[in-house]
Length: 371
Image (tube, rainbow, N blue to C red; front, side):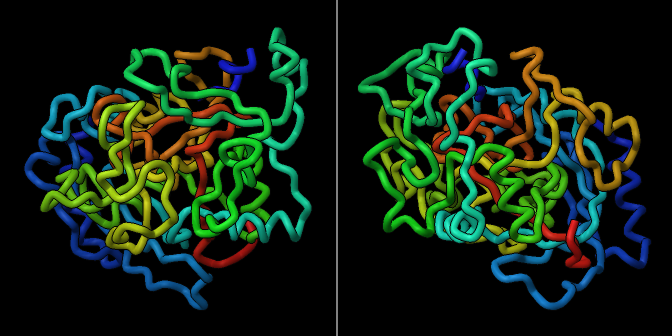
């Protein structure tokens, strides 16, 4: 999503991955299922790296290792979905070093501490500059952010402006606009944060944003090629395991998962590494620039070591508009429209854009040094 709309496959690498288990610094591989192998996934090989001490508060240790990154075409699988996600392929091999990561998305309470300590003013709280949005109506050149607003009834799904609006006065303290508040919602993920807001918080906290590769390795929890952080079934035992959209999108969320709209963090069981909400609830910023062809670039290198993203950005849908990667999906994801709560999928956003379904979590280097 771009605020300007409102204001103006590697089979050889897979085979080699099994032989790599002979490396004494690796744990035995976690093999992909037959269906995942057919899609191009190979074993995940975790490093034998113990968590360094002390443990940073609210963070969990990710051992690092080598894995198959990306997503198969969900329109050709039992997972359903209407989006083929070509930017999540080819599936390719990546290695990442061990790191710490926040067990949940950054909350309103955590962000409030940062603002109190630094007097930081978020992008959504600043007046947009006319030169950045030529032709934008003057009445929209006021502080604000993009807010989801459910229409009264069914609408065409090819026009997202039917359920999104630029709301003057919407920001992290007022998520629905003037008159709304985060009082009593201290444990909800902070939203309406633009990319530079997340970087400012991370620097203050002695952390940084995760790379896309780090984010996916952590979200997979050591599994190989599974569709969701908990396995291949969306509802194992008919139980919802993430805050996504049930009902009729976008006008009627049934709340079958226990929540209509955003939910407090950690309301669902964590993945095998101890991470909550890496599917659904709110999208999360990553540090990488977005290009739909980046995975093809990485695939040519065999095993990509700690990739940090491309040097520039490209979104064919909006040429000339730079974008950063989003991961994890949100409470608005649904098989009727967007299934990008699937663990290997990706999305993107203009760095100056904030919205009511976009937050973040941070990582910290294994050595616990400033970065």
